[in-house]
Image (cartoon, rainbow over all chains, first blue to last red; front, side, top):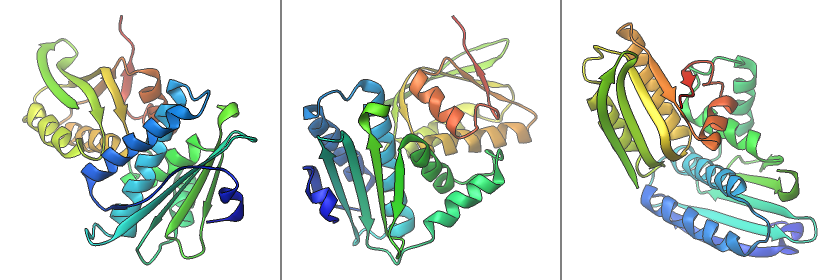
Length: 150
Length: 105
């Protein structure tokens, strides 16, 4: 966790199991807690839900390789001075080259039919957020949304 | 909560209404029920998305798989009346150019 994230308001920080039902349940818990953040409209709620779901699907399927013994750490922070929402999802996998997946999508251009779900999911995340960062190992993704710019 | 309702056939194909949310949990049910509803692909499919409030890459991937199956049988799939947020995901992923997306009143 970076110092900058600690300066914000912690909305959610939990380790969850690699399970589809649990993912859906926890995403709704996070969305419920975000109701206390002023000014998040229905469209932003939709985008945040998609981002969380895509990051968690990615962590479970590709990071943890669907290993039910492995967990996923979700951190959600809100910085009220800058109105930035930060979401960090960390899996317990070996890490993989997330950047390469996104770059492959960008190079393949309009071949939407050939894209796999992982490439499509990360591309959606990249399109809906304002900033996306990967840790060097490749098992943690942090996205940031400027709430006033959406 | 997700529900798939197979409607009647019309000139543009068999109408299948998607209602609720297609997320990581409901996606397997969506896949099974969609492929069952498509049957032997003897006609085009219209996916009525007017009551679909949420979908993500997993659901879109299933729609793509269904489209590939339809095209193997010289059939097509139309996406009818998606809500703005759902339509936005089709646009982001370029699938609005792959599917026929139609707005009917």
